Amino acid sequence: MTAQRAPRNGSGTPGPAADLRSRHRAVLPDWLTLLYERPIELTHGEGRHVWDADGNRYLDFFGGILTTMTAHALPEVTKAVADQAGRILHTSTLYLSRPMVDLAERIAALSGIPDARVFFTTSGTEANDTALLLATAYRGSNQILAMRNSYHGRSFSTVGITGNGAWSPTGLSPLQTLYVHGGVRTRGPYAGLSDAAYIDACVADLEDLLGQTAGVAALIAEPVQGVGGFTSPPDGLYAAFREVLDRHGILWISDEVQTGWGRTGDHFWGWQAHAGNGPPDLLTFAKGIGNGMSVGGVVARAEVMNCLGANSISTFGGSPVTMAAALANLDHLLEHDLQGNARRVGGPLIERLRAAGAGLGIVREVRGRGLMIGVELVAPDTGEPSPRAADLVVEAARERGLLIGKGGLAGAALRIAPPLSLTAEEAAEGAEILTESLRAAERGLSSA
Image (cartoon, rainbow, N blue to C red; front, side, top):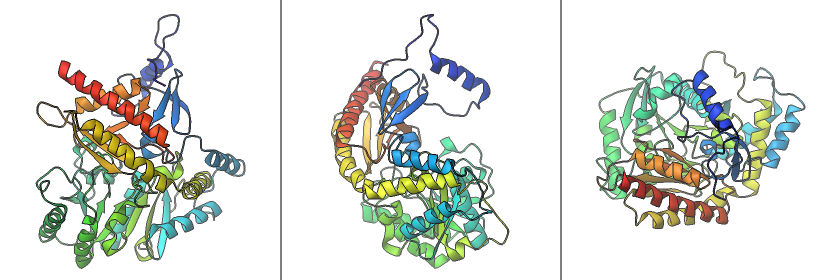
């Protein structure tokens, strides 16, 4: 099922994707990132596959940046959207909404947060922005702890706390942000330590940092750093942090925009790998729950959620159509045990990629859990992160019929996150293509 290079029409002029790229460049921002030297237009999908405007078929291992969580064109979701759209498309939160209340009840129960309240947004960025508003208002402070190499969105406040310079275009911020060690296990000053010693060192760093400031509102952390290249600390780090935070009255916000809904296989939420001192005070979610529809939100303890003293609404958050889609998607996820499938299919996929990378100089590390897998690439001669290697692999995979993403602090990590319904056969096919693509990239670097 290797995808062919984009065909040209009889006049020898570029096909539809090339024309669309020219129009894109003429009217959209220069900083709006496009994948591939020759960007593609995806026109439709089914299951774990998508097709482009030139008729090429691809196995999708990126799912619209972890957003197509269950499957493309999932019948239950498309029917729910059509049925709800046929009744009423929009009302706003000024009116009672049965789909919104139904979904809020489900998510509150699943969150693990006691006496939970749920507020719906349209994106993960907006969810994190809301969580920061709640935490700073509740604590009466604009000081935030964030993790190095983190990413939390593209709004003014979330860009300001992002710990990855490649995704933070301005140093201006309404918040004072202090960055903590711990999100990247295999790089940095503590990389050579055992897991227990690593946690102790990071906790000591946190204690030292808090000894030099006062009145911090919250720590926001991704259990697995998404844009950062699917890096994560040892299990239990945030539980150890929580013990320190509680002594200072500091809230813990778990950014589950990419880790939620069972993607890691071992847990439904990423915070559950760090549950020794209980659930977070706030939890943010988005992406996968809508399976492509614009759904995000915040879950928080009632006293935190209800701390705002001013009126507020959400014009598009909690839309009847997006809530109906999310409810159908969540039902499918739970009824088909897609968390268990992520564990069963993802484990062997990780091991196959580790075996493939063992003999290649460009592969520094294969990491991840379930169907959230990162491959960090380096220049074979220096061992330094190699964005060029990542570009070569991403392009080679596309040519062979596989879509993947990239990220990491230097843009040198592959991001692999297929829909959670991925079959064992599709995982094996994707692993074979990735192996071929890694080898091709290594040859390309050697000949450059």
